[in-house]
Structures are given as C-alpha cells and as structure tokens.
Amino acid sequence: MPESSRSSPADACDLVVVGAGAAGMMCAAVAAQRGRRVVLIEHARRIGEKIRISGGGRCNFTNVSTGPRHYVGRDPEFAAQALGAYTPRDFVALVRRHRIAFHEKHRGQLFCDHASSAIVDMLRAECERGGVRWLHPCRVHALRPGPRGFELDTDAGALRSARVVVATGGLPVAAIGATDWALRLARSLGLDVEPPRPALVPLRFVAEDFAPFAQLAGVALQVRASCEGASFDEDLLFTHRGLSGPAVLQVSSYWEPGRALGLDLGCGTDLAGLLRQAQQGSRQSLLGVLAQVLPRRLAQAWLDQQGLDGARRVAETGRAALERLAGALSAWSPRVAGTEGWNKAEVMRGGVATHELDPRSLEARRVPGLHFIGEAVDITGWLGGYNFQWAWASAHAAARSV
Image (cartoon, rainbow, N blue to C red; front, side, top):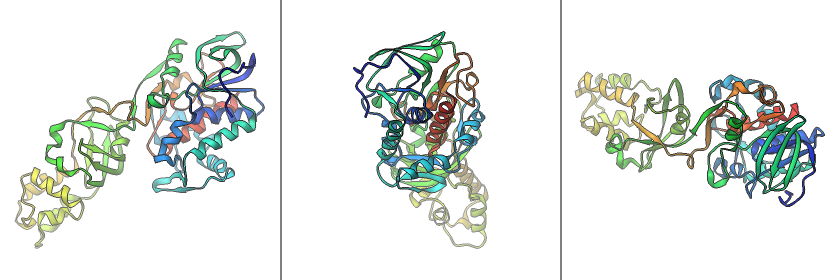
C-alpha cells in the first residue's frame, strides 16, 4: 500500500516517477519489474482518479485500432514508435492476467464490465509486484539536474535519483489534482512547450445560431462533424445550451478561434438527391421525406427555419428551395464562441514539444535522464480509449529505457 509522505525515502534510487496516474503507475511497475529501484511520488490523496472517472466509471482503457492517425499534435507520427512497441494487444494481455472482465463497444473501444477501479487495482498490484516504493501524498518542490542524476526536494525530504520520469498529466480537471507542474518544469529547464488548451471538451456556440432549435433539447442523431480537415461520424446531442455529444468532443481537439466547424446532419446521405427523387411523381411531404433521415422534430425545426411548409408535397416545391434546404442541412456551420474550459475537458492538447524528446524513450534530448510521458507530451488522442493507450505505450517506452 502507498506509504505516508512522512516516511524517510532512501537517499538514492535508480528512478523517480512523479505522478501516479495511468502513465506513472505503468512506468513504475515496468521499470521495477526490470530490477530498478523505483520511487513513485503522487501529490493527490487518491491515486488514479482520472482512471476511476473515465468511461462513465467503466474505464475505456484502450482501442484495438490504435495508430498515429488517431492522435493530434504538432507531430502525431512521433507516437508511432511507442505505440508500435506496446500495442493494445499487450495491454489486453495484462488485463486478462488480472482476470478483469471487459467488452468491446463500437469502433474498437474496450471497457471494463464493472468498475474502473479494477484498472487502478491492477496497476497498484503491478507496482507492488516490482517493489515500487510509494511516497503518497507527497509533493515535489524542486528538481535539479546534477552531475550524477537528479536531486529532488519533496515533502518527505531530499531524494537523489539517476533518472526521473514526469507523468503528472495535463490541466483537466483541477478538482482531482491536475496541475501544470510538468509544463513549468520543462520550461524551467529550457525545453519548448506547445501551448496547452482544452481538448475533448464541449464547445459553446453563439446563442442566436440556436434560437430556431431551442426546443430540441434531448434530440440526438449521428452526424458528420468536421474541422480543419478532420472528420468524424459520431452522435450529436441537442441540449438546452446548444450542442454536445461525441461529435462535438471529437472536433473540439481541432478547433481554435477563427476556425469553422462543419456539421453534415445527414451524415453523408445525399439529401439533395433524396429530395429530387421524391419530386418524381411522389405524393410525399417535405417533412415525410426529411424524417426518413433526421429525427422528426429536428426536420420540422429546419423546415420552419427555412420558411418551408412541412406538410407541402415535395413535388410542389421548387428545385432551388430544395437545393438550399439540402445544402443547409449538409453544411451547417454554427458559430463557436469558445470551449467549456478545463473543468469540462477530458484531456489537454499541447504539452512538452515532441522535437525535444527521443521517440524511442521519451527522454529529453537536452536533459539526459529526464523523461516526459502520457498527457504531459504534445500527443493527444481521439475520444475512444486512444489517450489511455498512449499512456500505457509511452510509459512502457520510458520504463524499458531506464
């Protein structure tokens, strides 16, 4: 079990891992089981809180289709070596060894059958198996590179280590202990940092763009959401405040002020062709045709917004009006006012610049012996288990190199 920060740490060790989240516990466990003397430090009172709250409490712990294309950052290809060396299959094998029941949801997402705490317990057990020494809760006040490694000033006293792995995560969510410690440390040592911003986060929209749809809270449908060349076929949910759901979360990682968001409410359906076909001798109404593709309430709201009578037969509606309607539904671009911020974000985009790190070991090129892993690095995954797989893979890469 974790020790109190009042315990006196050994004067020296092979590796200090700062941060006992997903990446930190994984790294400490792998390194310790390779025979390294490892100290794992965590400042929060509860370890692995982000694991516990993920996936609605069931932890979407990986995705079977993980590859560099599922990541965002200045150089997503940087992740290829670590992801190739430790794959979803490898992590699943670990989960099976601990007899944790799981299932696959859509698009390769793997979830625990029961509480996500099983993953936390698994990682803690792996640390115990390797003899990891815990300092928890314990803060690191200073870290100084030296001629023979690093000196750390902690709540538990001074500590010397040959190597240090920083696994303190990103800025979401402050209530569970998130800090910018990794970014401040990197900057203090002269390393470049890509500016952090919320990702996988609900977006706020200009209110007047939603006035015609204010009554649609609870309506959901699959759409094609796009931003800056990225496109996702995901569920969209109308809320009292605007739009939510996986479609919005996915494109939020690509959105920046000034960028446009595109929503194809037909999700690839040729709406113009559907309406033209219905003109050919059909007695169908406008509302009846659109309701084949869209939720009926949404179809009616769009017809009202376009000034069209839903009860009118398609055959009696002009071609130009139908083309305008189809175009508006296929390329809706509501104006984004901003994000809901760090407390609503699932992950951080940005972090320690990848050009500062060796992709094989996550070691800082200009500070030998110092590694950054997980969310602290400028590699951000899509929604669906990809961020956890980056945590496991980057942790494994660092642990195998120390």
